[in-house]
Image 1 (cartoon, rainbow, N blue to C red):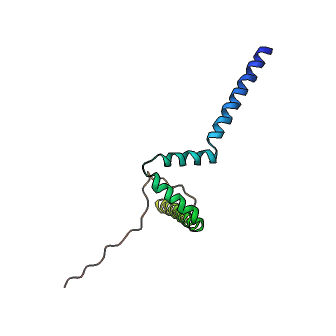
Image 2 (cartoon, helix red, strand yellow):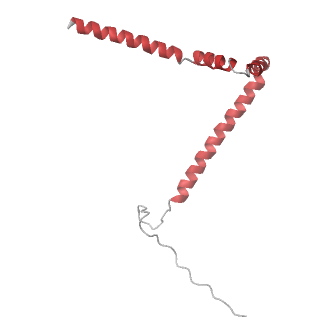
Image 3 (cartoon, helix red, strand yellow):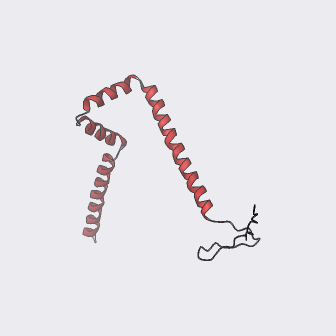
Length: 122
């Protein structure tokens, strides 16, 4: 039993170490560093460095632009959700018959009869 417990503890220690390494790789700072490193290895690294310098010189306008883009994306997602809600509400007819009914698309629906329009001859 002792040997089994020791093996379990060793496995747990290796697992903890692996999890720590994965968390280190997935931290925000490490992801940003990796993205910056990848951007610097591209042929456009000069443009990237210029843009980064412009951001460093003018952080407030960049933050305002980022906030505006974020707000735009937020509003677009809200509008899309509202359109989906309206579209789904329009697809399911509401029957106001005084009794609770379940909509069954396989059953025919009742529609008001229309009288044919009178035609006049000239």
